[in-house]
Amino acid sequence: MGAGRTNGTAKPATRMGRPPVADREAIVRAALEIGFSRLTVSAVGERLGISHSTLYRYFKSRDDLAAAAIDHAVETIEWPLPVDGWRSFLDETAWAHWRLHDAHPGLAREITALRLTSPALVRRDNETGVHLMGFGFSAEVAMLVVDMLAELVVQEFLVAPAGDGATSLEASQQRRRELVDPWLDLYDPRLRSVLLDAVSGSTTTWFERKLALFLDGVGARRR
Picture (cartoon, rainbow, N blue to C red):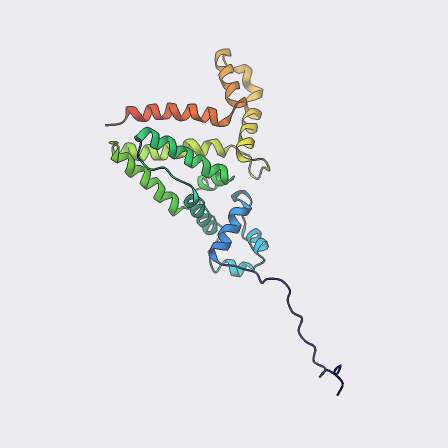
């Protein structure tokens, strides 16, 4: 009857550490941490230590997951209120879109691929359009402005090479220089200096100038 006796049955090994945690919020958070350029179901599963079947309980596909991630990203951005006039409102809205894309490299490609729809982004565009009508723009012009404003920002980030390790803006500016440098001599000298300044200087400075010109045009269409 010694204390060292056993009944011959081996005790199952105890699993160490915390079990994998998987719920909708954790999966979306993992997707955003991975980033849109590298987002796959496998990558999320590996990051969370869960199986594909577990992921598919929450999301039907990789695009379904990406749409949910975009929704979360949109909802975490601080969007402006229409309190200081239409021009200030649109200027601040453009920079809110800028912050959204700057925080999530690869988002521009995700949106323009036309494989998914983000309800949060749709709601945001609708609110912007409604506010513009409140400022005296027709429904048609309001919708055109909403569409063009988003495209103006997306184009700045779309040029970044997919999966580039640099920040999205750095990659975009580098790619612009690579594309333009071989052809600078084809431009009129007066245009060449402006273009060289655009691709060599601050991306945000050049965008500010484009945005100002766009808003000048918008003002001409107000009723």
